[in-house]
Image: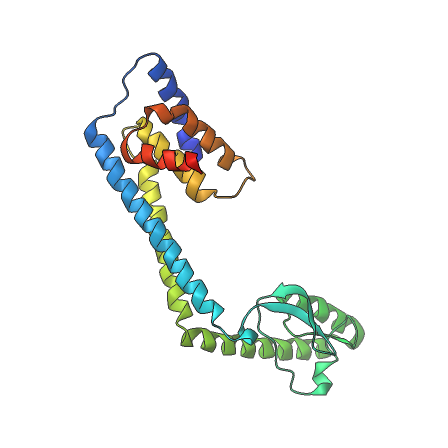
Length: 241
């Protein structure tokens, strides 16, 4: 169950019982356990974001040829078209440089993606036969593998694979602690507040597609008078923003 569904299912009952004078379990022990879990969550989220920044900074230091670029170039070397992840392919002769693009002789796909290769392969089959098309596809895939190997070597020099792995592990730890919060018992107002904070501040920051970023703050406003301690402080900070 997502955090927004968990919180939304609990919030109406909490508010209803509060209005009726029913006491929800808000003992110090439950709150302290939740606050300790929340501190771990916040620390893990901060560590994950820091790991992301370190990985991104290393990626920014890659040479220009190793970064994403446009798929096509014209005869003057100007790039255009969709962004492609593959580095530029080395064209070893003028003979191979101008023939392998069905858009015309003035266009070269220097960063061919899989879809482009298959489209051009079909064109080659129709115009030149399957045997020649197969040879071309083997050639272009080999050139692309060479380009990817060159970039992989450049990434390893900057320790990028290890940094990306560290970032992935940090986010996995954040998600694991989030799962502990979702499964936390008893279901107190502070737990609902924590679930809604995750939804409002972390998971859907700036994303409005499913309405969660708008719903969570509204629910927090409803239960805010029932919140205490660390969760109340975080909600207050969110309200200021």
